[in-house]
Length: 342
Image (cartoon, rainbow, N blue to C red; front, side, top):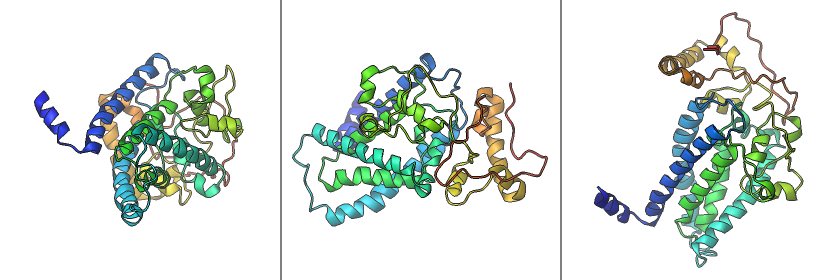
């Protein structure tokens, strides 16, 4: 068995061998964060089978990531590399560690400003609001990102690595760093990093960024390095206080396709279910499948996308372009199941 694995590993190219190492490291990081969330929770009582887990794990992490990887590398970066690849070899002679460090820092600096721009633009906010829609934030919540947002950010992230002549193994190494750091800053872990939080970003500041609080909406935009927030005046880290509200201050669809449609045209998901037989049928299939799982694993009922009561007063926090107004539902029949105590 070990000999077979060894032959398989040595038969791979450099990128394949690096990926064979980074993948187990990623799974190890997931396991560590899951243990830490259970043992040292930032927000006590957050269930593993929380609302939106199926959406984040299946649609955003598996399906969307797979197809967007093909689109970004095969249809955007590859043509750019064929056209410009022979002209730039600026980092080719650098050590791999220096190449990784350079692209991690420069891309993180870009992400800070683009992220900040999204929170100030009515148009680009629509490509980012899905990321803020979850009322229960944990290690997987960071995967919920609009497809357009991913295409923009990952093209700008990985195209320079190829075009500037970096070692190809920089791609899987940086992808690992991005994935682990993204899971870490969203993790429901009560971290106290002291003065290190002035440089390295973590859950302390980023979980505040996901809170539905007016005072933090234009704050804590950093991803990996919190120093950008402190340098440019957008840091928010109150001492001895945690958020009481999470998610968006307006109703947001719980379905992957509807979340993308909502970014183009505003609508009320419940009202749409009342008006459209096709939509009720679509939702019916979804609820029957997840309902079957929920009957066998009671803790998994939250996967159906039921509303999550947070027990906190509603916010009046505004978003770019103002908060969408809900459409009134006139029918007395519920359009989807309502969570009830088990």
